[in-house]
Length: 524
Image (cartoon, rainbow, N blue to C red; front, side, top):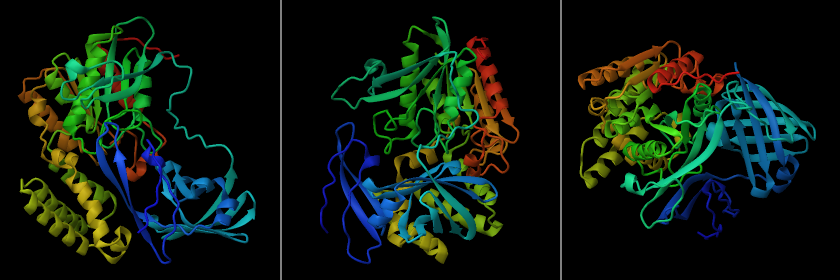
């Protein structure tokens, strides 16, 4: 029950404290006060913090970084990090893009070394051959040999397509500030102080050589808090895309989402509609630059960004063209229904398991989209979550924790503003208002936004609105990230070395060059 001061910080990823708990304690709940970038009060909860029993002498011996690799059919590179000063032990699975996994119970007893990753239900035990080498066994359902070697320098993880110097174009760091409720009157190409809820977005603009004005493409990220490169599982698709387009004569702006990386604002309580305001601010910022051709600015959105691009284009007739990368053409419920079916099948579940899961999902949709008053809504959600927990197997309950833990996590996911807005939004009416050229492209193995479900719906809506210049393309063997893949499952994303398929890059580059009037190629 004691309060332990942790000081102040502006980076909540770095908050840390050391305190003691009674013997036998398994979990700790920490409540912290929050003052966000807009100086509005609030609270942040860190629930289900795992207690580590790691001892000081074990931290001393293991201090530093250790590199290893698991052979699980594919090579999975691991980095074990022991930071004594922070009393922190973590594991990075580089190829899966899973970083900062909490390691508990690190023990060094003579030459024997062991640790656990409780949430993964995994453990390691081995023998220290010398001060820099450990050989042992990884256990996670199966047992696999695993050796660690001490390393001094931070490992550099480069995907084959990651851009490398020298660059035949200019790279400029940019920022712009605006009030999302009055963008045109408040937009500034710098940070400004104001009593109104101003947002500052920061990003990178790549400019082809020459004075311009240049045709330009604004990249709009998919769902979740994304940085300007849309970094995911050690892939940086927007960096690869921007490099490719700028080498072919197109300026490209990519930005950190609001409340993410170097951009300000609140991400957690925002909806797609809010993110559309951010994209509109980016479009207007580009139009105001003397080195950008104001009548040749296109929007290119991935996944959720494919919902946002038409919203901006419908409100801004000056948008020159839009590219929808795996953008939805039907409402959120339809997208998630099919997404759930395809992903569960890819995981190998039986038809009965799939149907049971989807039936339970449908009950949640009915509550979220039912328009119930607050009291009835809460009652229905509580009943739904209780029944969902009771339907779990013993192993699944062990993995998610208590009913209380399950309810907190599930309720937060189900009732956040973004989810409720997404489920109810139908993109068709907006698409019918788009008059600029449109390219909609999907991969045939996209399990998140299915090509067969969404491309025909996009085409139908555009045609119904009288659009004359649009094209839909399904690229064979590509997943939601536009990588060549086997099944399209999310678990493959980080294991694939390719970031963006060459045929995808060629398609969108040629189309944008045609629509924006650029034929330059700066490849050497």
